[in-house]
Image (cartoon, rainbow, N blue to C red):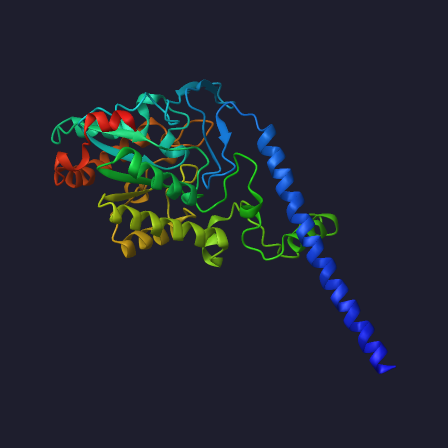
Length: 355
């Protein structure tokens, strides 16, 4: 009898394990199929999905669009060039030093005119005395990108554009997963071992507990409490940190100076109660450990009225805020560029034309 009971228990255990493994396999296959369908049916005027790239999505080349800010009715426009970035086509035959700006919507210049974006403001700042230095600033900012995506973009840009320097614009939500297109399942479930179990936990939370996270599913979702993510050292935060370190190492490998701008949130008063100071401190520490110069713009906007530095009805930095940032970064960037011989950054014109 004991042998019979033991045999039955073992059979039940093996059957349960087999059923769970099968359920996991079927669920993963279903999620991948659903995602592929989302890729096929995806339609957006600005974004195109990249199913086989860690970038996940990119801007559609040659798109010209006029946007209206709903709360104010203000109109602004942008154009995406043939390389898939905001602005005019890059002049690859130019012999001027090139500075690549990487970031999200802050770098892209969401809500401001093309001649007001940060890269253009830096160009103007460096062109006037006391610098009198002409550069070509490439705006590679993509709205919605996080630090992981920015790393993969930079890995492509270093070979493609041979920049003299790289400037990263870090924003408070840069550790969060992108939300612009359907998230790849391997990223959504990237921090859990069992996709199926994570799904079940989510369903229990939703159906029984009214959406309260009673059971931690571990899925990679956007968390508006950015400081909590830092303190908990979540998967998202760790991935962002690792990507930052990889960007610094990549620039060092290519012998390209790497500069970081830490942007404040322009939706919060710049007082002692500003909530994101721990993130500013953490990213500053990242830069220090990596030997990377960092400019924390929170130090330069202290006691200013944040409402005068943001796009009204939107919250992104306005033209005044971006011009202020350009004025702050210009001396550092000038010092970096003036130490680099032009021959180091300018490729043969015929080679550039072929890229």
